[in-house]
Length: 228
Image (cartoon, rainbow, N blue to C red; front, side):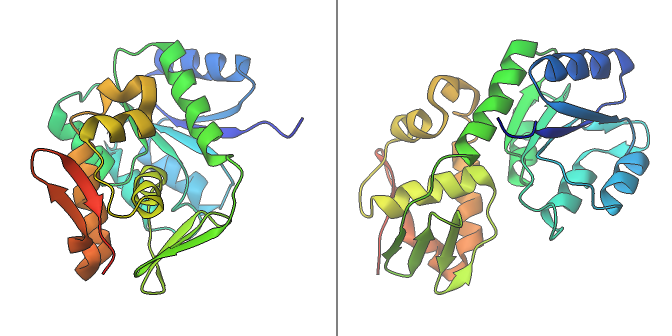
């Protein structure tokens, strides 16, 4: 059995932090808790390795999204899975968090069982065995490296963006309905993501630059990737 996964929890509510820490440790994870932006940045500046971050957005010295922005612009932490747990539960808040690179978003009050399930799901998906390299038009999917290239240039993608774009590359020209995408990417948890799927598609198009037009909306049917 390999070493336990190390999780960094950013939460200023002591009671919530203690409950999360205990539940995660009972599930076999190693947990470190920080309660402010300052202490989090101090920890990250030392380059400590973590396998996942649980992030609150409302912190005493600022907005937790600043941490997320830092991670996604950091060479060391750009691929670190992040689950936001926040009392900010409006659709706009969820979309913004996901657009900035969060892998998941849970609204307070939350179910501990649900949070643990989501964390395990992220670890399970990241541990899937890789296979071969697939090239379709200007796209190259390298499953060994879990990387996607467009015109030979590596795309900076979150884990969810990678899974979505991989699906399109593996099935070029196939029209995926919204329901299919939600089932294939999120399964039983699809109801949590139905309203943010469009935001993911939009973000992937932006990252594809001029090639974004190849990820097409088929009105009334869904989405498809065409290879020019």
